[in-house]
Length: 537
Image (cartoon, helix red, strand yellow):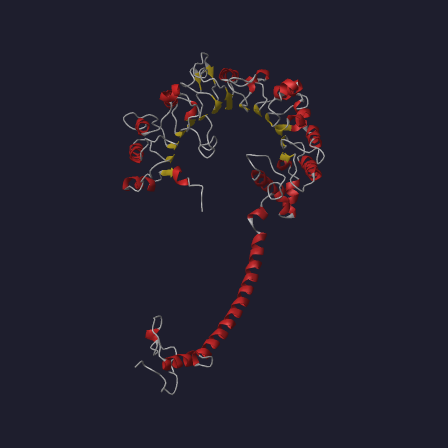
């Protein structure tokens, strides 16, 4: 018969005693008898010793919580008082105004012009305190750059932009200016008139040092027509034309040639569908930075006049001996010319640090007679943006980024043997479906990795290698052998990334993991795992 408390006259004095008659049954599937059910109910009823003690404890907890809340309030008030006193002697409060000005200037964006955004510098500095606002408003250098959207955001009155720009230019004092004007391809002149903003920029043209214009060029013709008297200090010009490809800016508007012929101009970037390279008349020898990109809407059967083919690209390089950065998009569709590889003229670019060649071409070998003693960044073909980028790698490293669709294997090995490269990125895409070229295309497989290892020792200074879309013959075992071989060389591998499709690569190998522990960055991303069947019931 189950144990029962029906005959007991009172509850146990020690109600918290774990040796309760039912302690052994707690947390089990035990089913109490009828008498035990009555005993259990007496134990937990509202007027039981346990229930009364629970109420007493809740009251104590409430009293303690009230006391704790009051104590926290006193503590927060005291801490706030201490922090307020500390703020009186904080380094930023004691910093001289000249130091604050330098800090403010260092907070400006480096890759773009300053935005008309109260959450960004320099407008942000006017929202902290009156002292900071006074310093910001009295520092012309803070207002020496501005990005102006000529197409207002939804619900924004263009008059607001005009007012901000007017105030901004006044605050810049007499500082040289960097201004970017961006417009949509099509705008509604009944809603706003961008020409008013352009006229405001015309009023400060004598102070323009950097100018970036993006949109239909007819908006910017008053600026493009200015000569050296109106633009005496303009050094860098960026033009991005969103006009119809049939529009020929310099042919239709010869006066627009004035701005690219300025004697002060050292940097030029032109992105246009209607750019006619035959009409470009520049002071080539004074350029230190050059970007030419022409949208190609033509075909080999109907070539566009003035497009940038291989011969013209080489001629441009020859004319620009002082270049430090150069990016050319070639629109030569005739793969049989390969004029880049067969260059007969010696071209010396003693200061060139960065060279990018993109567009439509095929290199059968590296450009002969091209001297690039200071080159630190070479990019051939269209590459994704998340790889190595110019400016992220410090000297004396040499970065080479190659899309295999733009050169043959022979040209690749020419490049690998011509430069003491430290960073190599290969994207294996074959754009040109030509059976005659199939035997000469780049294949990144096990044999390719072997050439980067002893005894071949190609690229002995290589520390970083990124490969995308290698051959189906690429194996994980060969990749691990490559890692072991390179880690045993005098110049050890620091980064090895492979983006591939196929079987998973096992890197959980003791010696490989020891390299990772020592700092090797090892990444194998299986692209096929990211592809899923589109139908999901």
